[in-house]
Length: 102
Image 1: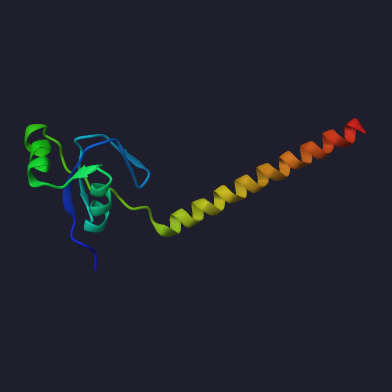
Image 2: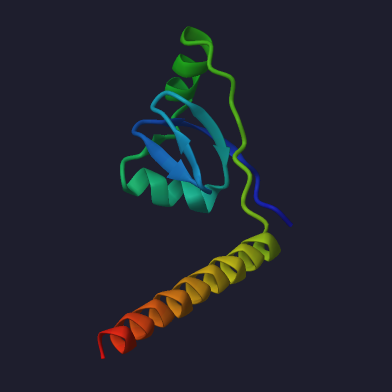
């Protein structure tokens, strides 16, 4: 069962789930994530802070999407394959240059 989401005001430039959120954005987040972000001073979950952004600034709350675990694993494999290919090619070039120097 998913946790109930709560609205928070972003206080600093915040990177979350590979998205960047500027100050005064309102995000709907899970309580355990809010606790961590509050402790680091990045969000404010008081009703007054959220109300200021939504009513005074006209900010529309958003719910950031968590990346799909399967997609993340697939991308990590692709990145690893690219890195391995790059290293193989770099090593081949080094060996080739070394052999040409004799």
